[in-house]
Image (cartoon, rainbow, N blue to C red; front, side, top):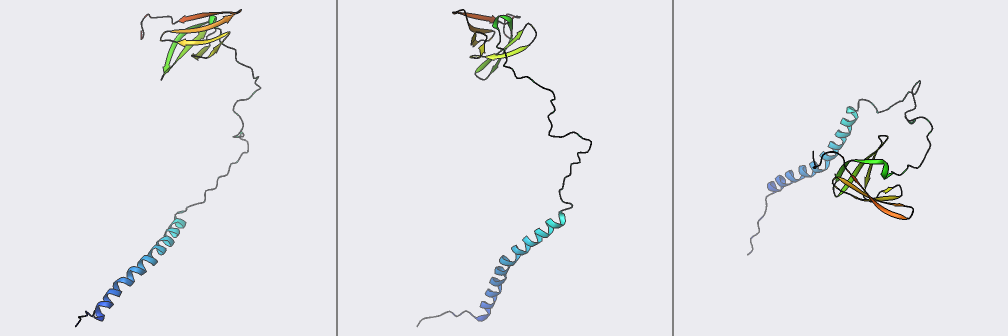
Length: 153
C-alpha cells in the first residue's frame, strides 16, 4: 500500500497567504514608486528655464571683437643670414630653434622647415644647420647660439 501525504488545508491557506502578497507587491509597488517620482519631480520644479536676451543698447554677442580691414599676404620666409640663434627647445623627439631677426621678431623653426632659398637641415643642442642654394650653388650655413660655452649656463 502506498502512503500519500495529504497537506492540510490550513497549510495551503498559509502558503497562498504568503505568495499572493509577494506577487501583488512586485506588480503594484514599482508602478506606485514611478508615479510618486513623477509627482516629486513636478513639485521640485521651481520655475521653467526660460532665458531672454534683451539686446537694447548692447553690442551683438556674435560680432567679431576684431574690427578693421585686413590684407591677406603670404608670410616671408626667414632669411638665415639676418637672424641669430637665441635658443633651442626640445619637445619629445624633435628640437625647435628659436631665432630672432634684427628687428626683434622671433621665429621658431624645426628640421625640414623652409627658409629663404633653402631649408633647415638639423637643429642641435646649441646649433642650427641650414642648406641654402644661391645662384646654382648650395652651401651649408651653421648658426651657433651666443652666450655661455656649456649647456645650462
